[in-house]
Length: 288
Ligand SMILES: [Fe+2]
Image 1 (cartoon, rainbow, N blue to C red):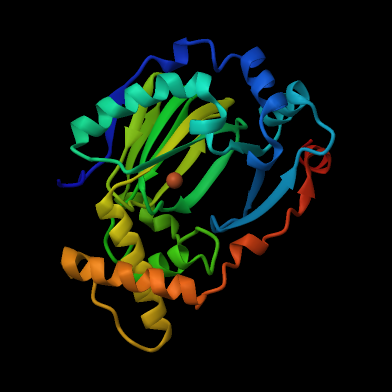
Image 2: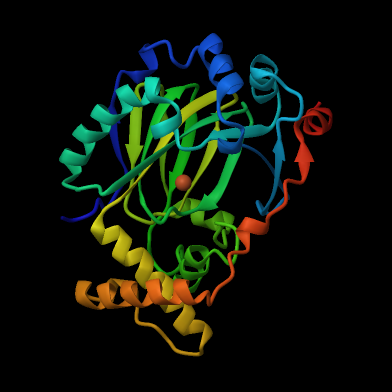
């Protein structure tokens, strides 16, 4: 298969199921497993650089949490929605199957997260080391999708992100925006983009609900492992070849090496140690 070279929009009907109305969302927030619910807040400086804080729901119930999202500057991820929200997934899976067929991809692993975000939320410049389909369900958001060349996606940064030695954020400059394709997503649209394409998101002044689906194919899994191994080799002072010039058998060998490296524990997972640094009640005060 050949990956897309530019973003592609599909239509869906999932926003009409009633599952993203306030009452349904409050119920999901109320009952969702606590360990699968992430609350995040971002703040920006004048250069567009970002800092991240994470928090927990404190004593907020489902309706209060929904109100905090709709009125604050946080976004909430409901992880593993493919397992924890079967009502929604019943609609997502067939829609994704049709998209995968159109793309000519054979997913071996699919995961979903339901994202509820505030009117002013921005998601900073980053890439995902997986195929992504973003099903937009409520509100309006704008996405900037950038080229996958070395200028926008330096390979050493890709390796560090995949090794998880830094938060999943790439070096970003505002001048990159001139190179981006900009898509405004409406409910009923789903967007996908070239593998690893950096992107950033800005909600357009309204509360947003999206389902972000990640998928791995054998090809994406090999490439991800190859980046990991390359990252370790680069730390050892070697200069790995560009991934675009690394043929599949070599990627497979690197992937196999990455499994051994992970087993040997060469790179500590620093993200795991991220502390939950604010509580929702406090965040609400700051945003007010
Ligand atoms: Fe993303």
